[in-house]
Picture (cartoon, helix red, strand yellow):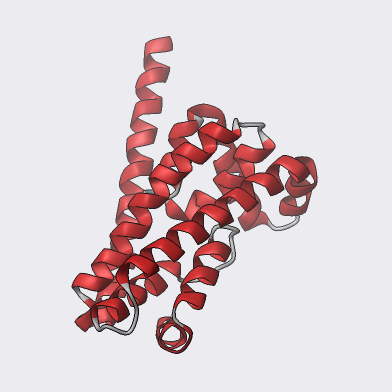
Amino acid sequence: MTEFFFELVARWGLVIVALSAYFSCLAVPVPTSAVMLAGGAFAAAGDLVLWQVISVAYVSALAGDQTGFQMGRWGGSWLTKRLEAKPRRAALYARAQDAVGNWGGVAVFFSTWAVAPLGPWVNFAAGAAGYGRLSFTILDALGEAIWVSAYVTLGYAFGSNLEALATLAADWGGLLTAVVVAAVAAIALVRLGRKR
């Protein structure tokens, strides 16, 4: 599957980088990390321009996050009902709602890069919860800057072994997500212990 997206980047370049970054922020299952790695690798090879890959991925990710936020704002209760019909998505959305309710902006910031699989759901939940657009935009922009620059730069630096790098990045992303979730759970337990 990842090789298919590498071929798409080779053929369509920045268009695929933009579409993948945008739609992944709306919970469409696209391997955007692999696409950004490929974009960086093609920039290193001279087929794409590095600053253009970073800019297109960044702006597209921001646009996707803003779209998800606005969808949550306009259709919060409708969206919740629609997601309840699909248990796996309902569970992710419930986690995102809890994260936004308990952590607010911290959840927005970390969901863009450290806990990226929860990111689209946090966008929807933040909009549905009436979270402030300015705060959402600032924290989202900071987090996306980390996510996009890290993956594109890794692709640029290690593009000669792109398939192994994509596998490593996927494993690293899962590990980072687990570490962040464990840290948040520990902080929540400490807070709960202090209240008692």
